[in-house]
Image 1 (cartoon, rainbow, N blue to C red):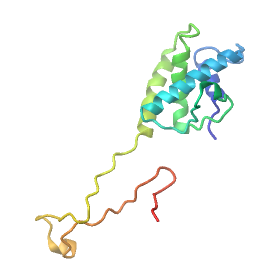
Image 2 (image 1 turned 30 degrees about the vertical axis):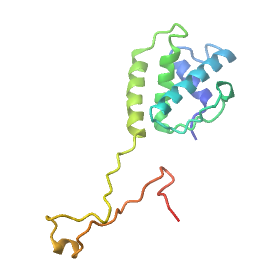
Image 3 (image 1 turned 30 degrees about the horizontal axis):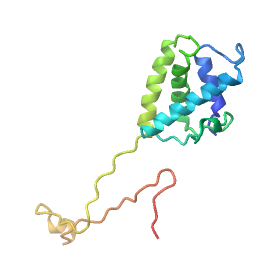
Image 4 (image 1 turned 90 degrees about the vertical axis):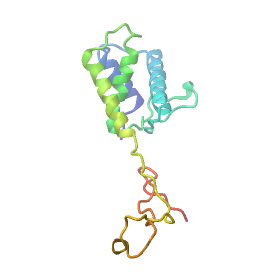
Length: 161
């Protein structure tokens, strides 16, 4: 199970020195941080990094206790980059460790979220060419059909009926 949006906000506030056990955050502060979290993930989504985060259609419709849906490898990137956005609002200096963590975790998240570029599949009507020897291809002058199915993500291959 992933972290809730409230847990991400609490961790980012703690990262900039506003720990929940010392400072009581008001509902308005939570709402402002929630809007920034939604905006941050929407920016990532616009850049092609889709993580499963439930983006609201309206900023007022976002639920702070909703499961974030983020994979484990994106949690640190979410709260550390949110801390980078929240620090100037509260007049806090971002610690160097949090700044480096935000950069490194964002880079790791981009690497994890990017899909490999699929190889071009040539049609099976394409001739093999003059360098192909008949004993290697069982006298088939054409390319073999693509063998790898197209994946639909974590659900598995696409099946057409």
